[in-house]
Image (cartoon, rainbow over the protein chains, first blue to last red):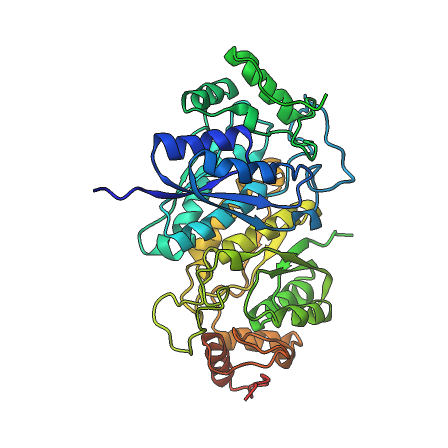
Length: 227
Length: 227
């Protein structure tokens, strides 16, 4: 009997991370430990969604870690004084959270080492994305190099691998992949300004990119919008 | 007039980070923003010490960020069920906190970007240390490479530099350096098992390494021990 790989899966309950969890659990048959970060984000509605979806899409367990990034601010997602812009931002938008994916991967690395997990899955993608520096292939490669020398496991020859299976996929490809794996996207919340019931605004960058993905895939958009 | 560099200084109120703060503020004349991480550590006595010392040793301001690493455990410092060993551990000891310095530097990177700071100072050293993988030069180099591609500032050609001025110093050299800069080490707390009053146990690895440092430097040890 081959022992299944064990992985930490960064999981927000959005379209990308839910697809990533489905890939890890259902396609690669990895033992998945879902990790959600409560970082003082404006759209905290994603946290109960993540709690509901982690086990549905194959996680063995689910943990929520808290880190108060709202105390350092610098982003529309963590500073209530900065409005979430409507879609179509140019360059790196104000919804970029300083060093967010570095912090998320660092926390995932800590838990992976405690669990003796071999992999971390993260649902970043560099095609239909918002111009965030920490969603690019060079960032993922650089973090993987760091992980190999940062931990006891790495020094002992068991580095944690960073898996970003959506890195080079368009949003439409991600959606088709998830549908093949049984993901019901009506469950998932991507919106930066989701209300307390998890209904999407339909206007922010995340909503626009998501809506375009369904259009391109030729799939009716199942998103629950507030208006 | 030359504009002073601005830096985030990781600061626990221990011997190494207090020396590092003094170097940054007093020798290099950098505008220092001290950052202490409350990570559920057993020796939380270091937090009020850090609050007291940050301004004394030159920080312009001081922030405490919370992250609940005790929820992932895996170390004697974050899991109350694991005892802090007495000094003389071989290999990587059980006081190693999985990915701790990766997490600390990631948080510092986030705050540095918000502040538009050019540098992060961290007081790691690879000579008289406890065998932690994330105190080695290759770790610091690897994090610096990551920082250059992880952030908006990095992508825009203003990467945050990682300064580890104690990296290649012995504990005795660190102590002499700090004394030259006016550090009163009686103020600082290094102990992994410090009591609520900040008194040191005198037995853990951190206490042993510190005590040996004073011995080697030929300086009377001013540490306040519990027994």
